[in-house]
Length: 64
Image 1 (cartoon, rainbow, N blue to C red):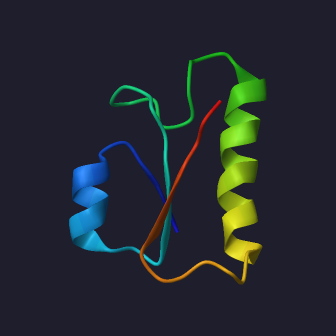
Image 2 (image 1 turned 90 degrees about the horizontal axis):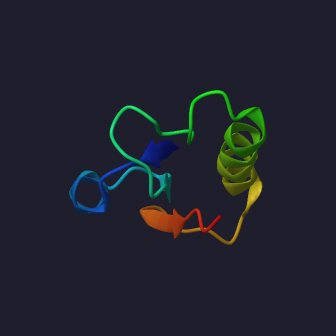
């Protein structure tokens, strides 16, 4: 499982599951001092671990 900032790299590496986030480098969990969005990113990633429908290499977008 990974949280990805660069979709192109994730597509070449093929981690088992990845969550693509639309944030700048250095901020994979979102804005600093924003625990609510950071919590939602972490929960989205953890939820992917439990989803049996996901295939190896699946990339999901964090859309918040």
